Image (cartoon, rainbow, N blue to C red):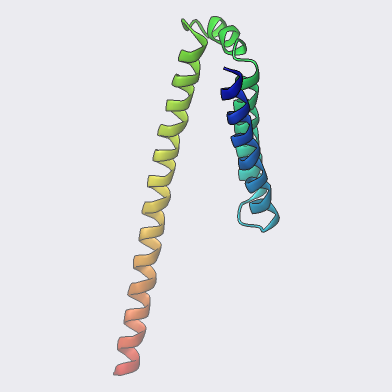
Length: 111
Protein backbone atom coordinates (compact mmCIF):
# COMPACT_ATOMS: atom_id res chain seq x y z
CA UNK A 1 0.00 0.00 0.00
CA UNK A 2 2.85 2.39 0.76
CA UNK A 3 4.31 1.81 -2.72
CA UNK A 4 0.94 2.74 -4.26
CA UNK A 5 0.80 5.94 -2.21
CA UNK A 6 4.31 6.94 -3.22
CA UNK A 7 3.75 6.21 -6.91
CA UNK A 8 0.40 7.97 -7.00
CA UNK A 9 1.74 11.01 -5.15
CA UNK A 10 4.65 11.21 -7.61
CA UNK A 11 2.11 11.00 -10.45
CA UNK A 12 0.12 13.85 -8.88
CA UNK A 13 3.31 15.89 -8.40
CA UNK A 14 4.22 15.46 -12.08
CA UNK A 15 0.72 16.52 -13.10
CA UNK A 16 0.86 19.60 -10.85
CA UNK A 17 4.24 20.60 -12.30
CA UNK A 18 2.89 20.26 -15.85
CA UNK A 19 -0.24 22.15 -14.84
CA UNK A 20 1.84 25.02 -13.47
CA UNK A 21 3.89 25.03 -16.67
CA UNK A 22 0.76 25.32 -18.77
CA UNK A 23 -0.42 28.22 -16.63
CA UNK A 24 2.96 29.92 -16.95
CA UNK A 25 2.87 29.50 -20.76
CA UNK A 26 -0.72 30.79 -20.78
CA UNK A 27 -2.04 27.56 -22.29
CA UNK A 28 -4.81 27.40 -19.67
CA UNK A 29 -6.83 30.00 -17.81
CA UNK A 30 -6.36 30.72 -14.13
CA UNK A 31 -9.85 29.38 -13.35
CA UNK A 32 -9.06 26.09 -15.11
CA UNK A 33 -5.77 25.93 -13.24
CA UNK A 34 -7.53 26.41 -9.91
CA UNK A 35 -10.15 23.75 -10.67
CA UNK A 36 -7.52 21.19 -11.64
CA UNK A 37 -5.29 22.18 -8.74
CA UNK A 38 -8.17 21.61 -6.33
CA UNK A 39 -9.00 18.27 -7.97
CA UNK A 40 -5.45 16.93 -7.80
CA UNK A 41 -4.87 18.20 -4.26
CA UNK A 42 -8.06 16.44 -3.17
CA UNK A 43 -6.86 13.28 -4.91
CA UNK A 44 -3.58 13.57 -3.00
CA UNK A 45 -5.40 14.03 0.30
CA UNK A 46 -7.52 10.95 -0.41
CA UNK A 47 -4.38 8.94 -1.20
CA UNK A 48 -2.69 10.07 2.02
CA UNK A 49 -5.83 9.79 4.18
CA UNK A 50 -8.09 7.20 2.54
CA UNK A 51 -10.22 6.92 5.70
CA UNK A 52 -11.37 10.52 5.12
CA UNK A 53 -13.70 9.25 2.42
CA UNK A 54 -15.47 7.11 5.03
CA UNK A 55 -16.46 10.23 6.97
CA UNK A 56 -17.88 11.76 3.82
CA UNK A 57 -19.68 8.51 3.00
CA UNK A 58 -21.33 8.42 6.42
CA UNK A 59 -22.33 12.07 6.11
CA UNK A 60 -23.89 11.48 2.68
CA UNK A 61 -25.46 8.17 3.67
CA UNK A 62 -23.38 6.04 1.30
CA UNK A 63 -22.04 2.66 2.36
CA UNK A 64 -18.30 3.04 1.82
CA UNK A 65 -15.82 5.80 1.14
CA UNK A 66 -14.68 4.13 -2.06
CA UNK A 67 -18.27 4.30 -3.33
CA UNK A 68 -18.34 8.06 -2.77
CA UNK A 69 -15.15 8.45 -4.79
CA UNK A 70 -16.57 6.33 -7.63
CA UNK A 71 -19.90 8.20 -7.67
CA UNK A 72 -18.18 11.57 -7.58
CA UNK A 73 -15.73 10.54 -10.32
CA UNK A 74 -18.52 9.31 -12.57
CA UNK A 75 -20.47 12.53 -12.06
CA UNK A 76 -17.40 14.59 -12.99
CA UNK A 77 -16.71 12.43 -16.06
CA UNK A 78 -20.29 12.72 -17.28
CA UNK A 79 -20.24 16.48 -16.71
CA UNK A 80 -17.05 16.83 -18.78
CA UNK A 81 -18.51 14.67 -21.56
CA UNK A 82 -21.57 16.95 -21.63
CA UNK A 83 -19.44 20.11 -21.46
CA UNK A 84 -17.11 19.03 -24.26
CA UNK A 85 -20.01 17.88 -26.43
CA UNK A 86 -21.61 21.31 -26.14
CA UNK A 87 -18.28 23.05 -26.80
CA UNK A 88 -17.65 20.84 -29.83
CA UNK A 89 -21.08 21.69 -31.23
CA UNK A 90 -20.44 25.42 -30.72
CA UNK A 91 -17.04 25.18 -32.44
CA UNK A 92 -18.53 23.17 -35.29
CA UNK A 93 -21.19 25.84 -35.82
CA UNK A 94 -18.60 28.62 -35.77
CA UNK A 95 -16.35 26.79 -38.24
CA UNK A 96 -19.30 26.23 -40.59
CA UNK A 97 -20.15 29.95 -40.46
CA UNK A 98 -16.54 30.94 -41.17
CA UNK A 99 -16.23 28.50 -44.07
CA UNK A 100 -19.54 29.68 -45.50
CA UNK A 101 -18.42 33.31 -45.19
CA UNK A 102 -15.08 32.63 -46.88
CA UNK A 103 -16.78 30.67 -49.67
CA UNK A 104 -19.24 33.50 -50.34
CA UNK A 105 -16.43 36.06 -50.34
CA UNK A 106 -14.34 33.99 -52.76
CA UNK A 107 -17.40 33.53 -54.99
CA UNK A 108 -17.93 37.32 -55.04
CA UNK A 109 -14.27 37.91 -55.88
CA UNK A 110 -14.50 35.47 -58.81
CA UNK A 111 -17.53 37.28 -60.28
